[in-house]
Amino acid sequence: MRNTTVCTAIEKDSCYICTECGGCKISEIIKLIRESNYRNLYIVKGGRAIGKIIRKQKPEAIVGIACFFEGNQAFKMLENENVAVQFVPLIKDGCAVTDTDLTEVEKVLKYTIRSESNQKR
Ligand code: SF4
Image (tube, rainbow, N blue to C red; front, side, top):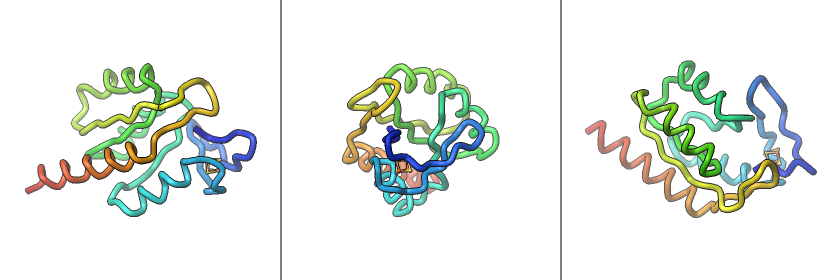
């Protein structure tokens, strides 16, 4: 999803750290994350990084934004983990200049938070 023509994100291991230049929707998603009680946002270079993040962060819930193929792979990878997983498919996929629907992202972020707080009651 990064706009690679303007992106100033910093590469670190298997992720990118967004500098919030405003060049793509990721900066908007970061704002949504800050308004919620999600702990982190990871821009991963590939699905393999997910397992490493899960082992390190031990999250209760994850919302992924990816193409159908990667999202499906992630679901399979996480089926035996004790974590709630939601997924927003890209509206334009490919290897670069992909896109997502921010309204859908916001809906899923809020739904997952509500589901999590209901489970804790
Ligand atoms: S908002 Fe972040 S990820 Fe998007 S282009 Fe700018 S630095 Fe890159």
